[in-house]
Each structure stands twice: as C-alpha cells, then as structure tokens.
Amino acid sequence: MEWLNILIVEDETPLAEMHAEFIKQNGGCRQIWLAGTLAQARTMTERFKPDLILLDNFLPDGQGIELLRELTLQGYGGGIVFITAASDMDTVAEALRYGVFDYLIKPLAYDRLAQTLQRFSQRREALKDKARVNQRRIDEMFNTYARGGDQTALPTGIDELTLMKIRDLFEDPQVRHTAESVAQQIGLSRTTARRYLEFFSANDQLVAEIIYGKVGRPQRIYRSASNG
Image (cartoon, rainbow, N blue to C red; front, side, top):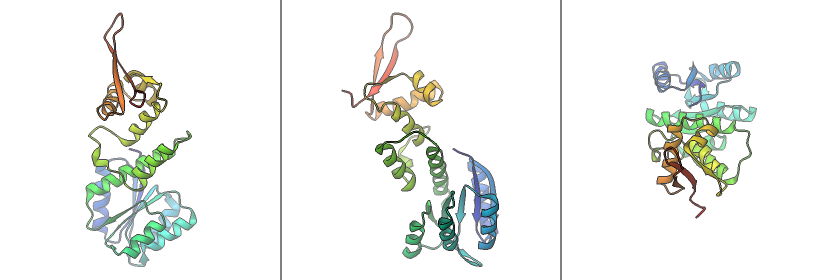
C-alpha cells in the first residue's frame, strides 16, 4: 500500500482524532493533518497538497460539497472521500458529479474506511504505470477502483494490483512462465509469485504443467488457459 498524506476535515475534534488514530494503525499513511472548518481546509490543502482528503459535509462555515466543487474546478490532483451524515440523494449525486472517490455515511464503519484507503492507494500506484494499457486493463481499473470492486472476494495475501500485473504477463497465449520468471519480472519473492500463479490456476485462468528435466526437481510451467 502506497504511503499517503491525508487531510481530515471534521469539526468534531474527538471524531477527527479517532479517524487519524485508526489510519495510523492501519498503516500506509505518511502524514495526517486535521482541519475543523472550510477555511482551514482551503488553507491546508493549498499549503500541504494532500494526496487524499477525508471530507465532512456539515462544517461551521459551510458545506464540504463546496470545497469538493472548488477543488475539482481548480484541477486538484488528489482524491476526496466524503465521510458525512448527509445521505440525501441530491448530495450523493452532486458528490459523484464532481468526482468524489468514495462516499461513506456516518457513523463510520472503519473496516469500510480501510477498504477505501487500500483502493485509493492501489489506484494511485496503477496510474503511475507509464506503460500503455489495453481495454481489459482499463475495465479492471474502473471496476475495481472507481466503482469499488469486490475486495472481499480475494483471499488473504492476494492483492488486486499484483494480480493485474501478473495477468498482463500472460496476455500472449503462447507465453510460458515459471514462478521464478514471474518473480523476477514483477519484483516478488518466488514464494509469493507461486501463490499468485496457483490462485490463477485454481480459478482456471492459468494451466500448470509439470516438466521433468534430466537433473534436478520437476518444474511447474504456467500458461494461459485460453491456449488450449
């Protein structure tokens, strides 16, 4: 998970501190700032340029949706997550229209916030990839990051971003890989690479073949299941 600089905009200080403490314990955070008003949020956003803003809607000097609108029009490069009691459809629709990354209704479920932080971090990392992408990769990014995806479907130790990177290695149905070759190309340990390859194999996306050499232990070679 990428290290993030986060601004929490929340006028209830104890609640803001609870959010901050959870984020610190959850990991992946470099710096956290707290703002209790729109004016403070504007100043701190301009000064610190946070990667992510957790934004309440009801603040002493206005509504958070105003800040979302302003930052979108200004071309703010970070993300914004609404954490608010505002559950009316008009507010939700406007937040979506101005590109909010996620919308969390109070009282906040912290496991849901953890999922949001992980998805946001994964999206930022994916967007740093300078390689050209195909339609499948774009669809995966929109489905997983923009609309939320089903993170609970993945077992422990399996990360969506790493899955996409390994899947791309098998885009050519003629390609063959071992756990070692995948580990070298993706930058993983051989044990981790094998775990992902076996995940694909168990889901019928890859086929594992055992090759017996003249010397040494037999080797598992993986290929795309689409190459029958």
